Amino acid sequence: MSREREAEALDERILATIEAWHHHNRPLSDAEFDDLALAIFAHQLRYDTAYAAYCAGYGFSLAALPSTWREIPPLPARAYKEAAIAAFPIDRADLVFESSGTTLGEPSRHYIEDRRLYDAALLAGFERAMLGDGARLRYLLLVPNPAQRPHSSLGYMMGRVAALFGDGETGWYLDEDRLLTDAFIADARDACDRGQPICLAATAFSLLHLVEAFEERRVTLPLPVGSRVMETGGFKGRARVVTRDELYARASRAFALPIDRIVAEYGMSELCSQYYDRPGSEIRIADASHRIKYAPPWLRTRALDERERDCPPGTVGALAHVDLANRSSCLAVLTEDLGALVDGGIVLLGRESGAQLRGCSLDAEDLRRS
Image (tube, rainbow, N blue to C red; front, side, top):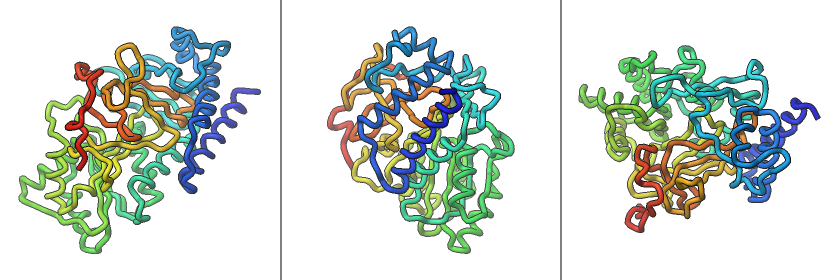
């Protein structure tokens, strides 16, 4: 079978898996996840030269395959800065995403052969997490504008979401790194006057800047009933940091919005799928910055110790994600994020600079429920 036919067959299986969950709430069994993950892994060993070379160091090849998805070697995310991680000729990429970067130097590049996989994964996850009520919202976006940053995965994601689920009046309020506060306030007030619920999507840093602008002007803007905020990105690489509790409390005051209408999304340019908080759920950490995040069934995560062994649930490790939608790049990605597996989801606890947390168990006080 040719590479193209093999890729197409795998993509159809992945799309069917996403569709079954998105529209029919069909779960993915452990055996089904294993079967598809191992088929994708074999495909990547065959056609993804850089990843295959990395896996050879773990003793894996087409002649010696793992027996379960947990044995698939996770490729460090920094490898996307150092090599073309792709199971196809990169000049055929349908999408190319670049990281915003947490350190100086070259951004990572994620080459995606067929945007159908990315679109299906992002839209299914967003609709389930953010649009359970089926609302048609006005999207006011404090994320990179694709017109200026065409390789931003976050900008692409929110552009697709707004085009499919929005009211046709989408606004973008970042001009490069400058926040267009006056334009945002004018458009938000217009939506309020019309009683049009809003989805404000913002990076944590942009949301902080917006809230500070409201506070400096002594402005509050009660958003219409049904409005919500999606926050993402944290404060990676920023000199100024506030806790999520503080950020959410200040945003709640600025927009007269219940804190449980503020949802955190967790994703990365090297993945096609995302995690989300489950707002209003009783299964969450009392501290908003430690809410449990949940993934769709085609995305699974391991927490690893220093020797890349699985940590017990509730024990802090480096997070390694296995994303079946990453068929054309690398399905297993080792991050620099620290976290723990809790109640079928993950809790984020910082970056690798806090490596002293690795191997620490979260006790009952740490996991106190709200």
